[in-house]
Amino acid sequence: MDIEVALKDLGPVDQVALSDAILALPQAAWEANRQRQQDYDVHRRTESVVLIFTDGEGWPDITVSRESGWEWLSDLAVPLMNEIVNTHYAPGGTIIRAMAAKLLPGEVITPHRDHHPSFHYGHRIHIPIKTNTRVRYTVAGQPYRMTVGHAYEINNQKTHSVMNKGADDRINFIFDYVPPDRVAGA
Image (cartoon, rainbow, N blue to C red; front, side, top):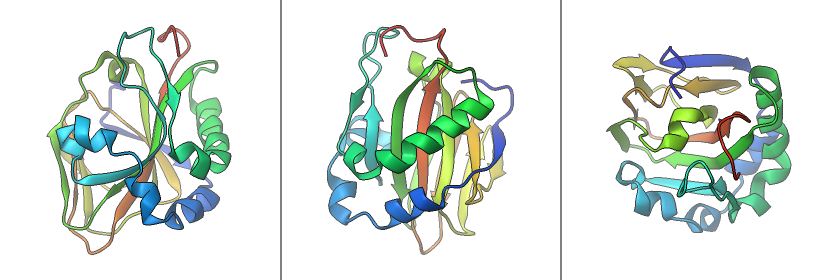
């Protein structure tokens, strides 16, 4: 969604329990669903644990499905997502995507804009789980650092990218929240 700024710090969140659960996941959880890596070239060098997903087909009458990550993380992720939504957005909408996303050391998510209509109407929220000083987000040509313990909304209608030049993984929990007046079938 075009939020008129490149990146908005939504403030502190208590992500510790979710972080602990994500960091304890076995490698098999990260490899269970490779759809994002296969469908979106910019994400081919990432790994994901997908809880909720839609490809947006038929927008705005879409189907949202629970994926393999639901069993691993939903008990901790859903309350945190709800807390963020209830604090910052109009209630009654729908979370249409939710996942833990890992960018391996030395890898890059190349500059891109999210073009599907669902990205025009949804708030893209990032909750850093693990990062390092050599991770850089760039949105609309400006570099940013996201801090563990905060949530952020990214303007995915602006060109954005991520590079991880550090020796450790960068892991964010990411979800898309669509306000109630923007989606029909979800």
